[in-house]
View 1 (cartoon, rainbow, N blue to C red):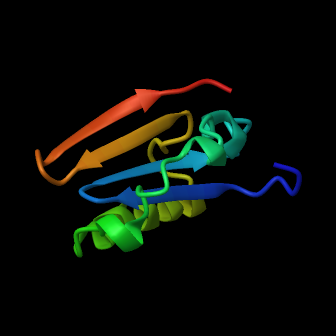
View 2: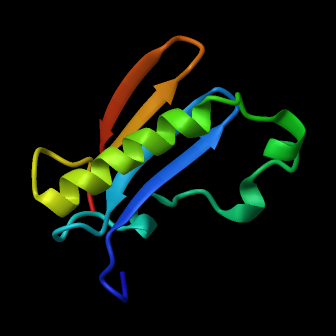
Length: 100
């Protein structure tokens, strides 16, 4: 936010992933979606312990790359102001709006 850089955010955990575009054209920033304090996270929710399905980083990374290309070329609608959630177990995508 301070440097005014756009962030194409991706996160993975077990069988789920999420993607969003932050700080883009006045849209929401990372602090607008970061609502969980580190102390509130249970110790055992660590990828070293629970793991991540191997193909998940590829799926989330491909969507992130697509968002970067759209931003560079100025084409289409980005995920700014939305979080795209992917569940590999149910093979479902869901999109949630969030405000600044």
